Length: 290
Image (spheres, helix red, strand yellow):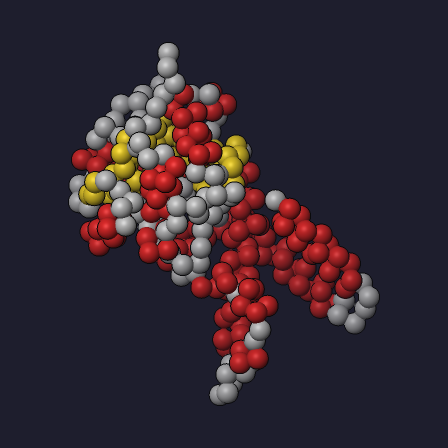
């Protein structure tokens, strides 16, 4: 049997991630017909950027018709709301995948809606790529290049020809697929992605509360603070569902991080602080090598 081909892709949500995926397909898999579904102004801008071939903004079912791949690039809450309708109207034998930042709740719902004996298949996904600025205006065909792309699926699903075809697409657009479990994913991104976001928010809001009439201390800020606060530019609307669906992991992580800050305060007057700098330096080197 010839390998499964993805000839028609429907992208639900053509903002930063969905728009970037569309542009990546256009650049690296130009034979795929791309349909976009979003609110009228967003999908219109995606079409004006030549990211999609066809645009839909009202009923969902027509956008799903004949799509080999349904790519959900919407907030977690919207994704959960739409999954039942997608399960009803996606084309037979379609692969449905999402790009949400937490996976446990998504996989729980999808397991019920896409049972193992169904013709439609759901694959959890999360591209570890993004920016503090959202929207189609900031979409980039190379957003996924050299970035990990988490995939959540059972061993049997990993060998499905539809999944194999999708993985080949991810490799074409420069992503690095990585298979792991939903709970393992949410724990890891809770520490490596969500905690840094909240730390940036805490630092940014703390400094904002301490601005004086001359703008100090921010008027003396250098590039180090700008780098540290890059994530503080992300809006709450982007993070609300992420925090709500990973709050147990985040609560535990914040407790442990607060203890580490307490430890740092205790070591301010001693050479013991050097060990923390050394550990941080080693982690930085590791990140630079990935």
